[in-house]
Image (cartoon, rainbow, N blue to C red; front, side, top):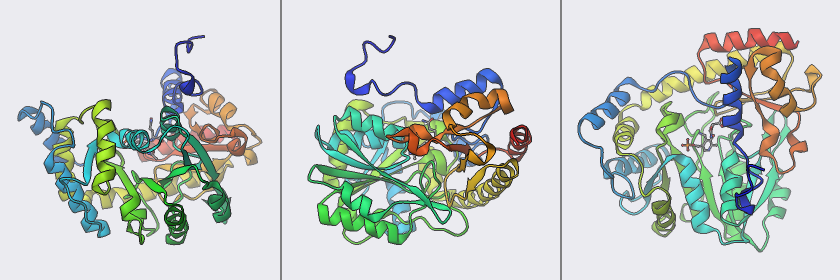
Length: 388
Ligand code: PMP
Ligand code: GLN
């Protein structure tokens, strides 16, 4: 088998579903509503800033923790939006996307055998990062309740045991679109405080919420700033998923720990993007507001289309994604359907079941991305009508 040389702890991980499905889309000429990336660019001036940075000689290693310019912009952004104060010198770390931040945080903070609570369906890199650390994931399943996915507080409390070290909290949540309410976050915070857990928060969709729903960072709750590793990235906020520029905000000892690992993963993140993102965090938040409104309209457009095809559709309060139930169309297995979808309809989507410890819990879900041009969404819906 091809995977023979792979270490045991990584054997359950093949190619990520995003790469697999994007390849399928390219090979079959299908419309790609799988991998979550926008098909339009971020703010023009920000793109120019990146070009200027390259032309202006910002092409050597930036400092390990990131360019001071970006660290200061991140700290200002946290203060302005959330009232959270972080010292850009010691409490902000720039990473190669949120992905590196999450992996470095887990590797830095979890001993082999430590348990990490994750809400499933979970973003695929969490499981791999936990496995790399030799830690153990403890899933708490999000289930539909009154049209949105949420967790049972008792199940969460039961998941926290003597070996639990950390909880990974992704809100707005990929793939369900749930934005945790203050009450849900308070439940999580109480368990973190009572059990002395570290919270690692993945907030990459922090600005992409709809219907007036506001994103509340877990770190803003009482007693949480001191135990929260807050992670975000420019990819989703500014429609530049290929820039892979992210950051960690946390108290200095936690940031120091993450940096110790991060410096041996990549040492530092690319300089030109950092300058451009620092500019955008300060000057392009109006663009982000307009983008959020545009995305909300796209969400509604694709939701209406998927409903007309016959999917059961869950309304996401944030992210790029719509979670659907395929059973009303007579299908039972999302993975099977995802593999046949190019041939049946010329469209690609993501089978949500791959984000569960026990895939049967998510077997009947398919995730569609709506961060695409209106005409692309419309054409995808037209094609999907063949399923009806
Ligand atoms: N977390 C979640 C929930 C995501 O959907 C993604 C994909 N963008 C990431 C992390 C990775 O972010 P980045 O591209 O900045 O590494
Ligand atoms: N975050 C994007 C998604 O969920 C894709 C990330 C990736 O390709 N690794 O679709």
